[in-house]
Image (tube, rainbow over all chains, first blue to last red; front, side, top):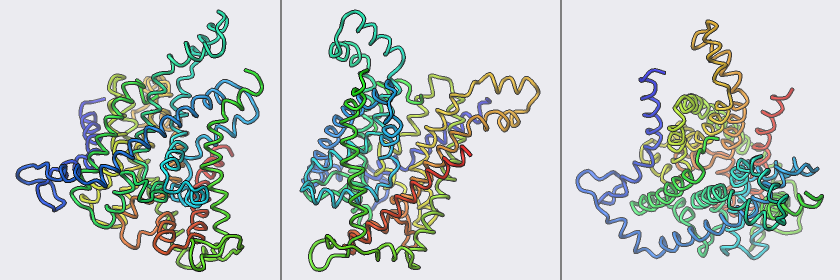
Length: 256
Length: 255
């Protein structure tokens, strides 16, 4: 390929980042207009963001919910991936489709169904409800990542260990888990990022006690965006970007 | 593996899926069949009515459904038209640059939906085109991911062989690469369609009052009017449309 299309391609890829970078730029504005700083940059809105207890509580809650849901999601996805990839059984096809289903149902429809459910279960306004919902929403991506790592080579190593006299738990603990660690980490990061960003199911579920960052910010973005909101967006984007970099490092080649 | 092993292994995931996908959907259908709240509460339990579904066919809802489907088609088309060349470009990079390129594509979506939409809201005027572009912008990363995987599976010697036999660049693309990547195009298209039908961010944050999709209507019925049964009926229609979009493309693939 000639050099021209190549430069153009990279330019388009960088151009896709423009909206995110614009937001980050606006967040350094010294005044309260939602425009990028013209003269000097300021951390005024970052200070305001840090001092506002509603935002700091939301950030803390977002991180907590994201960490917990990542753990739950990966813990459920790993054995499920084994059941789909390694065993031939009747429910296999159904399980495979079901594991991908949370990604296919429109968030508004799922949110509208989970809302009365949590109301009835008394989990509305409880972080546990949010954690379990986010863990479920993370299942498709966690499952897909883990499944690509359940290679034939891993299966051979596992059966070699069994042949050498290790029992089931020793195989899991000494062979499978260490070899799967990059996959587990990548899946965990993916669900974590998904949870931090998840807004549209969360909108239906967040009560004042369970507000995550998106639950505070999306209504504000709709009705009265402020420079503080630009800071909140930049902070979540930063968290997500860091997560992504870690994830790619651990996962190696994400394109496969 | 023993016979009960798959069941045991899948039990945690099945519990999550049953509790937070199946149960909500069942309850959603039940609430959609209830009378609206009389007095306090959000719906009247233990009642049965089809009026919420009947209302799906009034002119207001009909125009919303028509708009949603049209909007989704446009969004899916745009995300394919942008995603396919990008995927081709990424596929053409050397192996060591591909992770970087894929990472760049993924960042806007996974790193900050909020930051992306906030920025787009500042950069674009409100309106139909902006709403569709925003939604497509959020879907393109997935389209690219699906297409890159599909393109990588194509044996590169095939295009080289076609070229060697005298095909032009365009002919090699048209007769070899495109047909072989077609399953990826279908998959990316059906995902784009299903997610476009569930579109909420674009219409809500960059659309005007005319850009009303079903997802926005669900949210409005539930929170602005407090009519949960109607919101639930709208949500059922929404889920059915999205699943139909997935199924339709699948049926066409295997005639």
